[in-house]
Length: 255
Ligand SMILES: [Zn+2]
Image 1 (cartoon, rainbow, N blue to C red):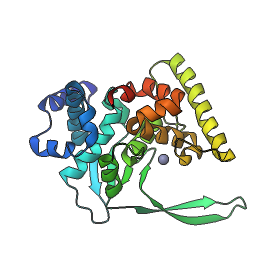
Image 2: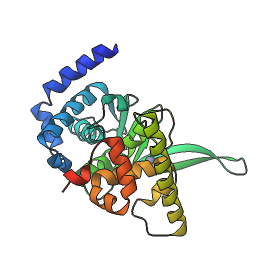
Image 3: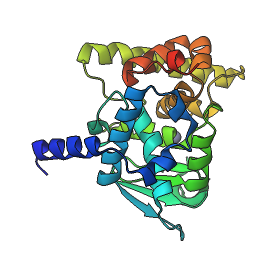
Image 4: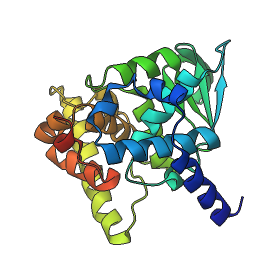
């Protein structure tokens, strides 16, 4: 679709707002209560476009329903509340399983032997593929807004990181000079976290964030939206960096 045509369609969809039968599913998410009326309107507009443009598929017998689509879309759109749809341009399909799902992968050991491995997952984000979510966790994550864990935030943060083609924990920033400074500070924070994890120091951010800078960005995003005041207190620099990228200050609004 031509860019101008898409833009016009998005404006039209956004203005229509969410129909009442869908708004009820938005309201099962407590984070909605922390938005002011302008933000709430903007979120609804983003959700309208998201629902129109993204393809949701139920897997393992899960029947796709409005509740599932809205609950996932609303959480995903909170991340881009002050950004733009372009940040999710690589999100085409969201596969939803009823619960945790199995993922098979092949890994080569140090000795060069290819091993088939199977993991149980709550969510996945593929660089040029879908987002995969376990519905029960996606729902509970949204219903429980301040435990610092949210699979939808986590996987969509990966998609933001992947937008520039590299999964490195550094999402695309608008200005080049801003990006260099941001990258250095974020890399340093991820490294500090990893070193603390290795030393066995008690961590505020999830230990999983020590496995890769991309995971650090994803777990920090979960905390940024769920426990912003704690993040600001415990990891002020990470909070500042995420505030710059997301253009949101949830510690100020989530009181
Ligand atoms: Zn991850």
